[in-house]
Length: 266
Image 1 (cartoon, rainbow, N blue to C red):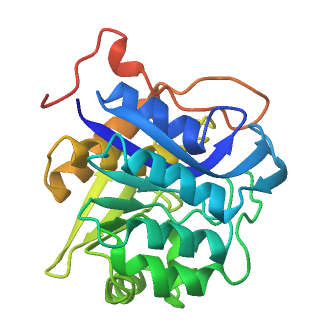
Image 2 (tube, rainbow, N blue to C red):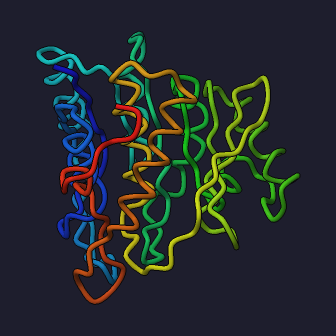
């Protein structure tokens, strides 16, 4: 049985965070486990409040999983504080697991979700342990300290992020105009993963879903570029089959492959 661990926040509305990750793992044939970093009261419209999990409880969750059902890959989502970053880094240090980091900083509804000192801890403690990082434009700008307004600037930001330690940078282009182009940089060259933009408001949890899909494919043994390519195809289908639930940005259709459709290349 292929397994994966998500270390992320809990979204009570089910569209993002741990809930989206576990749905993605299940949809892609991976047994999912979780370590919750923070409990967020949110829905398709807004974030209302948050209760962060104590570092020792977070550490205990991760240790409980690693000591009993070793994951084949790890996905990291919302880390609400520098203490959470240091806790996760300490738990994963010395492991040889592929780690996908989605550096969640702002919720889909626009609310900031991280502490002021989290960025520096992230760069110093966690990025050197990461296999692949999936920042969006705002996250890439915050982590690199560089503008990302055009293609050359995005390439420069990817170079800077790569220097911080991750093996691969996937700079997401979901907020660009036109086609959704994600910029992939592995230290040797750039390539773009592009998909048509889908006209829908039901995009809650897209970043969580993409990063957990990449982790799922890495757990299944795919190489990095192939895992990204397959995850990109999966999330495009999940967006196209999004669910009109709630009064805001609805969730994705994570299980569309089970509705009589076949996973491409499987």
